[in-house]
Image (tube, rainbow, N blue to C red; front, side):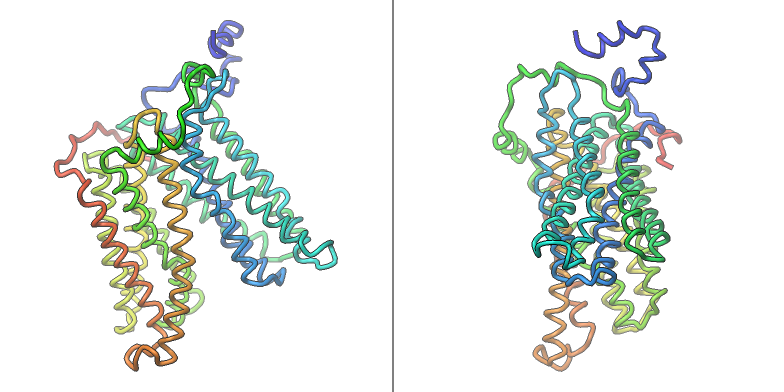
Length: 473
C-alpha cells in the first residue's frame, strides 16, 4: 500500500486530505489556476537572476568598491552548474524513494539552496568589502559560496520545475504551459528589478541586508506555493527496487534519437546569437546614436515588449499545428532582420531603425526560446522528460553565459584595433567593434538555421482542439 492510499484511508473525509502536499492524481488536463500557481517558481528564478547579474553587479562595483574582475568572477560562478542541468533532470527522472515523488524533492532542494545562498549573501558581501573583517581569503570565499548556492538552487529548481510542468501538460495544453512559464520569468525579471531599484534608491548596508534576505524569504514562499499539491505520488515509478540506469548510457540513447543532436546544436547557436549583444545594446545606442540615458534605459522595456508579444502569440500558432521547431526557425529569421536593422542604424543615423531592431530582437528571441522549449518537451521517452529539459537548460544557459562574455570581449578587442587604425581607415570608427559582434550574431543565426532545417516537419500537424480558456492570459 502506498502513502497516498494509506492517507486516504486515514482521512476519508477529503477535507483534511486537501491539506496534504501532494495531488491525488495527475489530471488529464491542466487547469489555468493550477498552471499559474506552478509557474510561480519562474518568478523566483527571474528575481534571483536580476539580483545576481544586475543589482549586485552594480552594488559590488560602486557602493562596495570591489574590482570589476572579482565581480565578474562572482557573477559567473552560477554558470558552473549550468552544464549539470542535464544530470539534474536525469536524476529527477530516475529518483528512487518510498514516498512516490520524483520532481518535488529536487524543486525543494533547489529552493533551500537558493534560500541559503541569499540568506548569507549580504553578510558575505560586507565581509568582502571590509578589509579588517578577517583574513584576506574570507570575504571572497564567503561571497563565492553564496553565489554558488544561489546558482545551484536556481538551476536545480528550474530544471525540476520544467520537468514537472511537462509531466502535467498534455499535447493540447503544452503551448499554454510554455508561454505562461516564460511570461512568469519575464514578470519576475522586470518586477523584481523595479522593486530592488525602489528599495535600494537610498543605499545603506542595512537596506542591502534587508533587500537580499527579503528576496530569500520571497523565494521560499513562492516555490512552496508553486509545488504544493502539484505532483501526485507514484511509488511504482520511484520504487527503490527498480533498476537504476547509468547517466552515460541513458544520455547516449537520448542523443541517438533522430534530430536530438541537431536540435541541441541549434539551441546553442541560436541562444548565443540572441544573447551576445545583451550588454552592448544600450552602450551602442548611447555611443553611436547619441541617445540619452533615459532613451537607452527604455531599450530594455522595448526588448521586453517584443518578448512578451512573442509569448502571447505562440499559443495561437502552436495550437494550430505549427511545428515548434518551425516556430523557432521563424524566430531565427526575425533575428536576421533585427540585427541587420541595428547594424544599418549606424551609417543611416536612424534611431527609429535601431528601435525597430531592438523590438524585433525580443520578438525573434521569444519565438526561438518558446519553440525550442516546446520541442524539448516533445522529444525523448516519457521517462526522459527531465533529461530532455535538463539538456535544453544546460545548453541554453551555458551558451547564453559564454555569449555575453564573448560579446563584450570581441567588442573591446575589435574596437581597440579599429580605432588604432589597424583595420584600415574605413573601419576606424567607434561602431566597428559593435558591428563586428552583430555580424557575428548574424552568422550564428544562419548556422542555427542550417542545423535546424533538416528536422523541421515538412507537413504541419493536425490542428489541436483549442478554447479561449487555454490562453495563458
